[in-house]
Amino acid sequence: MRSRPPSRHLNRGLKELRRQRSEKIASRFIATPHTNFNRPTPPKVITYPETCTWYGALTFAKVTGNKALTRQLADRFEPLFGSRDSLIPVPDHVDYTVFGSVPLELYMQTKEERYLKIGRMFADKQWGPPEGKRVTAESHRFYNKGLTWQTRLWIDDMFMITAVQSQAFRATGNPMYITKAAREMVFYLDSLQQPNGLFYHAPDVPYFWGRGDGWMAVGMSELLRSLPKNNPDRPRIMEGYKK
Image 1 (spheres, rainbow, N blue to C red):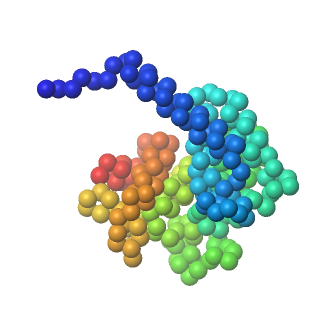
Image 2: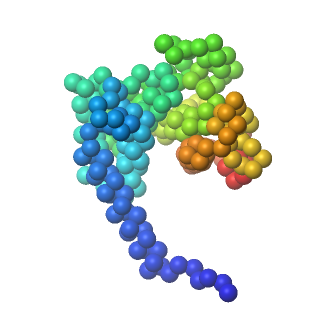
Image 3: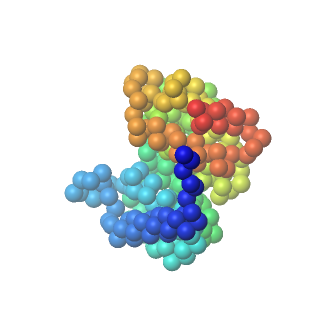
């Protein structure tokens, strides 16, 4: 016996429930001081879990047209322009560079150029020449291949990298950003995806990691929703996404 599709009334109820839960998460985020991986001490810089929550809350505010929420999330950023600017991470690692997705989203929602300046700097540094204390011989090897020098071939990179580069494309309209991110994604797909569709954590870590596969899935979604239809890497990414 076939099950009946959900009624429109039920769909509306589920949609409203998701909206309410998302509002609660965003409100909790706004009221919470900068987090440090559940440690009792404050962080030295904004951590990637906070970046991801911030970006998600901003996306929710945009989709729902909640201007008041956008303003609250922008107010959270305001001290980073002044007395607390030391909390802005140095973009020398994927976990830090992903922070650029937040000011880029704030720019798109507020049109304030100061956000664009910060966000674009993060995206540009990711594909610029290797620099800083985290540079290794592999950094130069990947850079010389046209990849970001922050490449590690860890599956979580495929959200950290694609998020900020996709955001830079959306904010500036410059296809350079998303073209590079797509090329990087194909490199990771070819290196890490297995015949069953899942991903190894890294080439030298041949184990499946549930959260890591989630990073890959959301990274491909983030990329595909803005990747031009005529991009030569799109079919390969779509193949990996559907696998």
